[in-house]
Structures are given as structure tokens and as C-alpha cells.
Image 1 (cartoon, rainbow, N blue to C red):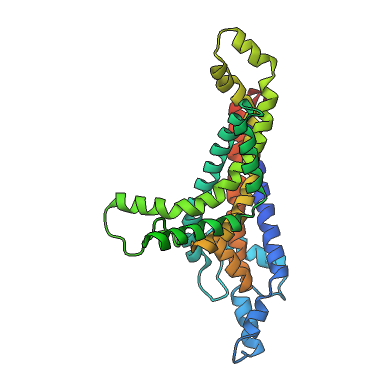
Image 2: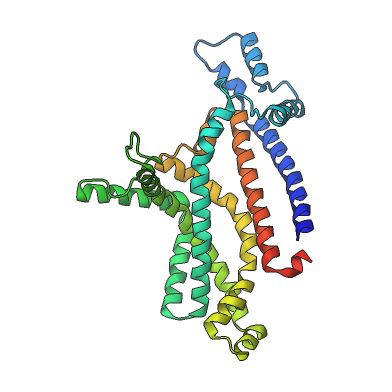
Length: 327
């Protein structure tokens, strides 16, 4: 299994390099930092604009491969992601925002996956019953509702609850209460409350998606010969389903988890903006509007690392669940 995982890790390292280069090339071609400087009032001299662009490694007159080489060299040798269009270190913003987004992304995606797999397996066992049909309807409603709309519904519901009772029931803006006093327990409870609505907005979509796929794979397993054999050997129906059926049916979900993570990250960009979370998604939107190439590439680097790390985790789970893969 170790040899298999080492091969996958090397494969993902190559993918990461390719993804970052493509992100840099696309950002360098699509964004126009020169326009940002030339639009200032009073308009700076052309020589001043040229000098600023060169100093920030944003000069479109320099070949993109050369700019990428300088950027990648600074990252590898010094851990430097360059400077923003405002001439501040990109790494400062990156460090401040990355943990904000990771909290939301990891909890939201894992919660959506666990609940979705459980709901899908439960729905398959109760095929065509009222509970199965009800879950199907709810899942398709959630699948057809954009993430930002779910987030707005949740936020407006929290605002309505506040207006009804006269005080805030669930926090609906920010990721912590400024100036909160108390010990670690008070701060953990505060973080959990602020996480509730943004996490739900991401997890509900994942729950709907995973439940549909899990229901289909579980239905294929229910009629299998090895499941009937396990029951014939004395295992109860429930034990056979959990020990043999669910383990087999969940294998495709491990692969799906890796490649659905990017969609979750895209939804988080809207969720962070709606709930006032100053994370990577909000930063990406701001950076595109400001034509900030280095900041956009930093966000894409984060997204690539997270997606490929989830892919490696999915490969590890797949190998652990299916001995044929690691042989």
C-alpha cells in the first residue's frame, strides 16, 4: 500500500505544478494590473507605472514564463507569494485568511459527506417508502438551489428570528464575536455558533449530492450474492449491511469526495461574502476586481493544494477499503 501511495503522491505533485502554472498564465493573461495603475487620479507617469509593475512582477511586457519563474523561485526558496497590487506581502493576507476558510471548508464538506452517505444508505434500505420518497424530493430541491440562495435563506431566517425575539438567536455575520471575554470554552462555543449557518449552507448541497449517489450504489449492493451469503452464515440483516454492504457501496464515494471539493470551494466564495467571513473565497473575488494577479494565484494555489490533498485522502481511503487497489 505504501508503494501505491508514494506513486499517487508523485502524480499529485506533478499535477500541482501544472495547475499552478496554468493558474498563473490565465491570471496573467486575463487580468490587467496596468489598467489599475493608469486609472489612478492624478494619473501617474508612464515610467512610474512601468517601474511599479516591474517591481511587483506584474509587468505584462515581461514574458509570463519569466514572471512565473521569478514567482515560483521566491516561493520555493523564501516561502514568498509575491506582493499585492497595493505593494503589501501576499503571504500576510494568505496566513490570515487560510484558517478562516479551512474551518468552513473542512467541516462543511465532511459533514455533507457523512450525512449524505448515511442518508443515501438509509434511503436505499427503505426503497419506495414514504421516507425514501420524501428524502428524494428534498435532495432534488437542494440540488436545484444555488449555494448562495441557500445561504441567503439561512441568513434571512436568522435575521427574522432576531426581529421576532428581540435578540440574536444564531450569529449570521463574521466568524467570531469581537471583544468576547471568557476562557477557551466560551470562545469555542462562539466559534461553533458562527460556524453553524455558513457550514449548513455548504453541507446541505453535499448531503443532497452524496445521498443520491450513495442510494444508487447501495441499491446495487442490496441484491448481491455475497450479502445473501453473509446472512446465510448467520449475520443479521443490519450487521451484514454495515459490515459488507456499506463498505462496498461507499468505495465510489471516496473518489467523488475528492473531485467535488472544488465545487464546495466555489460555493464557499459566495458563502463567505454573504456571512462576512474574510476568507480565501472573499479574497479571490476582491482580487479579481482589483486586477491583482499575485493574490489570485495565491488563492488558486490554496484551492489546488486542498483539492489534490483531498484526492490523495480519497486514494488512501479507496486503498484501505478495496484490497485490489493496493495489490
